[in-house]
Length: 564
Image 1 (cartoon, rainbow, N blue to C red):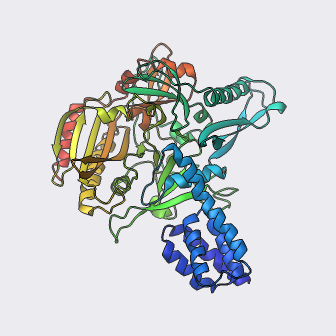
Image 2: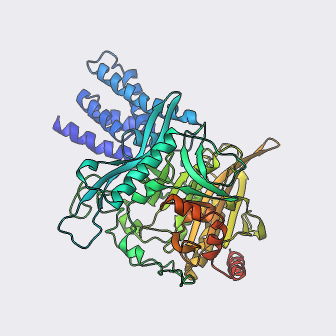
Image 3: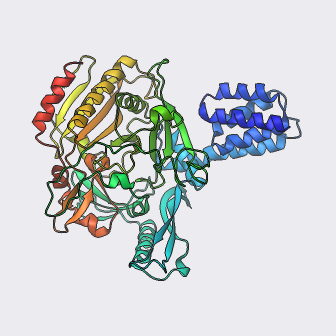
């Protein structure tokens, strides 16, 4: 019995690696356990623990088909089948809000809902409330924050929350007032929703009948600033990254930053500590369990070079509907434990993954280099739901400002990749390719088509690296159906930066810009006053961090890509 249980543990770990290969996994299970009832129950529980609801259902179906309907454990099996179905029904219930997205053949939205429902998209932090230098009597606030599911008539909604766990035992302080203020603001937004005039450019609260989201933002067409108070509590930037951007003040606004990362240190928060993504409990990785991995995505460029990317949830999402971290396979430590800079393989891989986004345009994948918004010096990208909440309001634009930017110059490569210099406040090179869309976004496109686009993006990124220009990269796709012909277009945007931050006029406050801001959506984590100070200043903020002169960058892009 002990040996059978050990075997069960072994192949259940394998199930996590090959999740999605339902038939293969089911056959392995049936062959290894020889229909031993005890091990089947253990294995099924582990399947549910690892969120493999589809595989578990397939497994149960096969067990029933081989004559287990009269077995003494059939009732327990049925209970587990119910739990599997409940995960899918839960996602379907929230999907009434009209959200549906996935990538690499994986239904990420259902996985996100399951994680939220099980309380995984939360974090607890301890905040020091001491305002002085005396550390003998320090009071700490224990704060829990994240995303939760709220049941309402007609369905369920995803909402942000903040909880002060020791409110009654901690004396009043500025930080305590700050936490309580965030909680009060969220409560007001979620309980007294009202819709602004679609023609207004002033600040207001937005409720969308289809999404159930409650946000506060200002429109400065074509740019938007959104209040993101919960992200104030997210883990801080690593100390080594804090020193990579040159300090800027109101009198030193021309200081520049470099995209060159500091020396890689594996003791980063992705690998070490309570919020880590990877690593069993031990001396190096630290105490507790690592974060739950949502899936392992295949780039599927070809059979010989089929690289994998891990995908995890972000504990402090920019969008309660979904925000993810994508990292090259963490199990391949020798190749993939490296600094926050893109290599050619990364550009090819993300281009391939972007081609599999379903529904088309429902996700945006982004990369922040050192000096351009990155907070951790370990290679990673972000992915979040599109369109973002501020664009859900009827009558408001349904995409980022950069997506509507005009082209000032362009040329086309041999396989059809269009490369353009955009008329945009920050220097931006757009690369795109339209391909046959029959079969949907999950179709395996010829490697030659994706290789040209991925290679062109890698070349442009390399130019930014050689210029030591901080840069942001974004990927997404879109589907068109003109005259009955379905086409899928892949888009990528590479922003050339001079620095990470800008000074907001009239307030002299520093605002850090990442990929979202480059695209046209500003996330304000400070205060309502900070958000309102951006009114009329968003375009100038983008110009202030742009790498210039752009004609020199553009000429170099043309020269280097002509060699391909």
